Length: 228
Image (cartoon, rainbow, N blue to C red; front, side, top):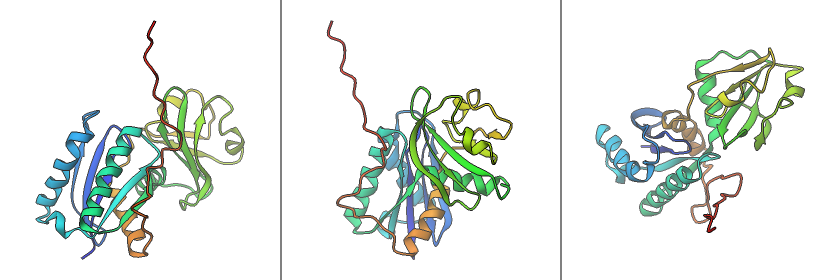
């Protein structure tokens, strides 16, 4: 039946979707910040009801693995693993930046020599980013990058780059080049996650449930309160 649940919780917008053989049956988004923990399970129940399916019908769960929000990723992955352990079904993981690039290409024509640069906000002038070509082949691996006026100048000397994601807007004034193109409003969503995950699911590229962890990319820093 290939009924797959997708969970995307790497940003302030949490979304879930239900796909059967890669075709969308139902989806739900939550745009309320800091509410993923309380909203996620009700959202999953709702999409199952919308599609007239039972959670016990699921054959796999697809998770957006990160990078992104530490808290959001932790909640999403914990939920996904809990469902997989309970139902004894596989987990499929998709890099969040690759998901963003996939979504961008679906709605934007890209010339052959252009590069895609999905960006997720990582505080101050730092972003999580990667570079891909127009066929979504990775040119530069995922990294946490501090943006300044020299960023991407080597690549921009030879080809145009499309920047998008919730980390791109703050870089627009700093990356000042005629071949740097910025696009607003794109967020990773479970609807597209289910399409990408179905491809991995059908080829058996699943995760080791016992050891899988979100792709945080860098350590989560907890600042101790001042006692003075």
